[in-house]
Image 1 (tube, rainbow, N blue to C red):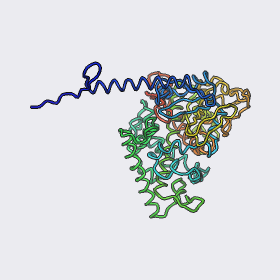
Image 2 (cartoon, rainbow, N blue to C red; image 1 turned 30 degrees about the horizontal axis):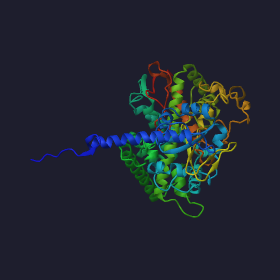
Image 3 (tube, one colour; image 1 turned 60 degrees about the vertical axis):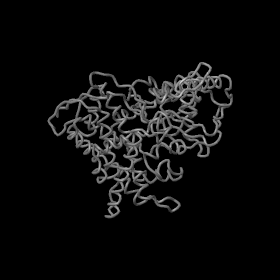
Image 4 (cartoon, one colour; image 1 turned 135 degrees about the horizontal axis):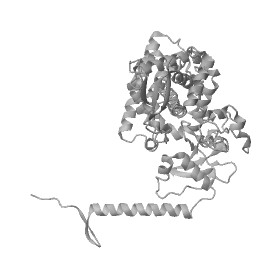
Length: 519
């Protein structure tokens, strides 16, 4: 029987197996790439472009240090280069512009200069679906936001508060994280990163999209949204269709969720009942663009995925962070309970929308949580034409990316005293607790892109869901405060952030130990 010998190649050192030659060639290529990359950074720096963060490995660049802790990465390089610098992120050149002026430069950039669609469409389209959000011209996206925003009214918010409360109580009763049907249970431990995403998706779907949509949702649907969320990772930003498990789950989840919305849409079309105050009905009635083109039902279904993910992401992350911070401050929990009593009476009648407007301490807890833990640490745009950085000689070339980090000013002691300390009181007396008047341009807390406080972004892509977020979070937190006392599980401190996803979440374990309040 013939035996196949390993392929060998003659060389100056005799005959070497092919595998050795390939390994040696790969090693030489890597070494030469590193050497060339280093020489290029040291010898050929363009003085008219922002300084580049030094990195040994081409293509990978600063991916590891940026991905592990973006805020530390920003601060370390700010000390070296100032507010404007460039780093390489998995083959893409990212120019960072920090501070309120940097936020304004990027988030208020002209459409002809910077594009969110070009930066994100490849990442978001497989998650949301075709024809919506960034998979359409910017003018279309602005009209889609207008369609959705028309349903976010005070009358709608007033109707949402009791619906949110009912969903929270229903979740508590049946969830193994709380009572699991045993309403007499007096203590327990809750994994917040399990409970809060489910609770917020149920409350958001019931209010923003209606009872028939909510009826389709159970814990398995919350898992589908988790699969969609896992499509928002750095690897998918670079390789959106990479053949790995999370990609296959993302694709399956998108089809399942979009098809489920289509079932609801078809039924509403059949019955003609579009009376409920929700965004889905608003779109089914009114989603006609200025040029007379109507959104297709499939596009509306895909838009509902994006809207629900936006509402769920912010609220799940923010409510978890808020509960963890309150778990470290039992005295603040009692003050919040007293505020509930002051506003709603000693019998603690059901909270209403107008009550939430009077709960200044509760709203300041939410505001402070968003200051310390804004959901998105980086907002990117692709540069569409050579872009001059105001006040510098730098030009960011077409094809590069620019990156704003609205969270950086929110933890900067130039604007906020003791910024790493959770202190809702700072919002009661802004002049004493927020150093806005000390800044060179006398910035103010506002919705403008130059504000140091931008948890919902700014400019044309600013999140439209801020008011809904406060309604949802205020209602959920009010119920927690009334029902429970809690501490962080095991006496732990508030956990450090996990930056592995697009949304900044607390690291695990993020659990609380609770006891029921006595009535």
